[in-house]
Figure (cartoon, rainbow, N blue to C red):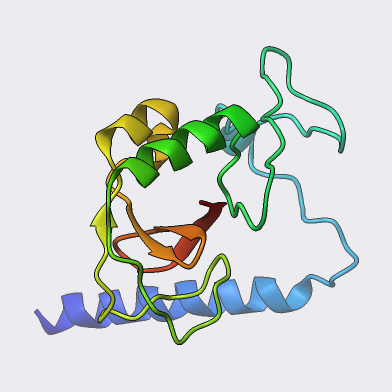
Length: 156
């Protein structure tokens, strides 16, 4: 048993020492040595081709531009924005008063009462499924329920 432990410890020390020595021997401006033949024949990882700024991948549509103040990561067309605000206005909810700056990324305090987004909104913008909202003044704030961060601001 002691021999096995000694051999294991020795092997670990040799491996760690070899790794440290090989790391010290390479300079930053040198290219790494060629990989062993077994690694060269291994299948390569799939990597998406680089897309230059202003280009699109073939077969993809460019997302419509957002309109209005601080849309965050939401890419809504004017039509989507109008439909969503109309749906939300139909639900009579109590406006909230916030003591924080209203901006995308701001965390809303837990003490504020959030309302679940109506199901009809998910048909228009499925990415918001399960999200909440509040009214603040003449603005609708879409809230991430996990983090309580504002993800979008819509003019009501």
